[in-house]
Each structure stands twice: as structure tokens, then as C-alpha cells.
Image (tube, rainbow, N blue to C red):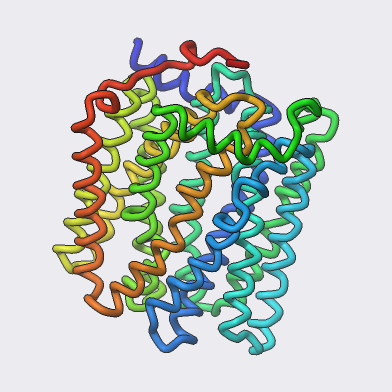
Length: 416
């Protein structure tokens, strides 16, 4: 049956041994990351006396490195061996978790410690996210890249479905120190998996002739001069400013309640996971990239509007689940499209720009939405954010070029 072949074909990257090794370690690390991120948000809200702005500031500090040196730091993945770079990134992640665990266990944790940890984690993510995306491309045949990005998103969102809910339970029962300790342990397997890949893959740095400081400028120029790349970046920008940024202030939206915080964040992860399993295997067959991306942001914005209107936590969890359905499809479609359309010698730098308009803008937008929460309340903030995302999506769909924009991997031969 064709539909079954289409569905099974989406999971072909799981047969690649190198990806099995990498993703097994990645799954452990992501569970640990969600334990830590959830605990940090709840602690900031508690220590600050219930300030949503304080939670937003934590997110903003996490984003600061993306804007101060995002493309420059991302370009390291074009200059050095990506495997070794990822080992260094994960080692720093382990060290931050260990310090937070000790400070919390000794009852010495202060607000500035959490802010400092958020800043260090931001620097780590600025290097790690685009390097990781390019590294997956090194491990897989080009024709399977979209499926590989989808599988990474599946792993990520399975962990997002489990991690925050697990963190909420752990923090409520045993305290935040246990969550940080969990991340200390969960960070180690990925380091081991990356070390074990030695000798299995070729040098994953860009060729020496492609290295140099000019890539920072040329990567940005490539985006500004390519209308399709520019619109993909704009779509990702509105999705993350008005949609996914709200995920980062869920502790404030739930008034610091650990169980409700875990429920909402877990619902987002569950929706994203269902999207990967049941939507993306078939949605990938459509080459109408523009319509697919803007329809997804319209869906997300509409779901958030309903969450703002109906002030019942179970209904809000369902709405965030529906928002999560769009999250994975949007990420897989936009990330793979950027990788296909980016010139190979500028891939990490352009992925660095992509990380700025995705991961980077989320925390800064979260800080702004946190201030709106403190001023106008939770419901008005969610309605405002979802409404803006929906309206911008309608505008993008009204642009003929974008609405009709199509491409397939065969349209973007490697090296072009």
C-alpha cells in the first residue's frame, strides 16, 4: 500500500548506524536538558517573588549570545571537526549542570547563579545547534536529509513530551536539586556516543579552502539576496516570536505551579511527537513549501488564541498540544529547506542565522511577553501573541510568490 510505504520511508534514517549511536546519546542529553530548563524557570519565578519578567530575563540572557556572535560562533562548525566541537559543547553542558546541582544541594543558589548559567548555556547553544544540524547532514545521504531532520525532531519532541512532565513531578516531590542531578547523569551518554563515532566518519569540518571570516558576511548576503531563503527566515521569525516564545514563560503562565507547568510543556512535546509520527511522513510529499509553512503558523496562532480565551488548564493543555502539532512540521520543513538551499561552504553560517531567528529570538520575545503578562495578565498575552502570528501568516499567504513557492531536493543539487 502506497500510504504505508510513504510512512515507513520516513523512518529510513533510523537504519543508519552512526545516527543510531548519535541519537541514543542525544535522547539522554535532551531529557536532562528539559529537567534543568524546567527547574531553572520554576526557581527563577520562585526566588523573584513570582515575577514573569524575571523568567523572561532568564530566557533573554540565554538568547544574548545568538545576537552578539551568532553567525560567528556558528561558523566554527565550518572551520573545525564537528564531532570534536560537539564533545566540547556537551562537556560544558555537564559542568553547568554539576555546578547548579551543588549550589542547590548546599542551599546556596541565588538568582544571579541561574542567570549566569542561562548565559553560559546560551553560548553553548549558539555553537552547538547549527553544528549539530550540519553534523546530522554529515552522517546521512543528502536525499534522506529531510527525513533525518524529521527523526531528530522526533527524538527532540519525545524528550520534550517526557522531560518537562518528569521535571514537574521530580521538583514537586524531591526538589530542584534532584532535577539538576538528573541532568548531570543524563549529559554523560552523549559524550560517550560522540567519542565512539571516532573513525566511523570522515573529517566533518569544511574543506580548508572554504574556511575564513568572510563566511559571516557572505552567509547573510546569501539570505538577503535569495527571496526563498528570506521568506523562510521570516516565517520562522514570526513563528518563534509569537508562538514558541510562549513556551519559555509557561512557568509564569501557570503561576509557578510545577505540575501544570509540566502538563503544558509536555502537551507541546506530545503534539510535536504526534506530528512527526503521523503528519510529516505524508506532509513531506508536498513540495509547496511556502503554503505549508504559513498554514502551519496560522494553525499555531489560532490554537494559542483559543488557549487565551478559555482559562481552563485542561483546555489550555489541549490547545498547546495542537500548537505542538505545528511546531515539528514547521521546524523540519524550514530547517531542511535552509540546508538544501544554502551553499555548502556557507551551511553552518546560514544555519547560524537560522538559529538566531529560531532559538535566538525566542528568549528575547519571551522577556517581552513576560512584561506583558505582568502588565495585562496571562489571558490577554496569549491572545495577543497568537493573534499576531495568525495575522502575519494570512499576510504571507496573500503574497503570490510565497503561496506558490515550491521546490524538491532534486531542484537543489549539492554544490549549487
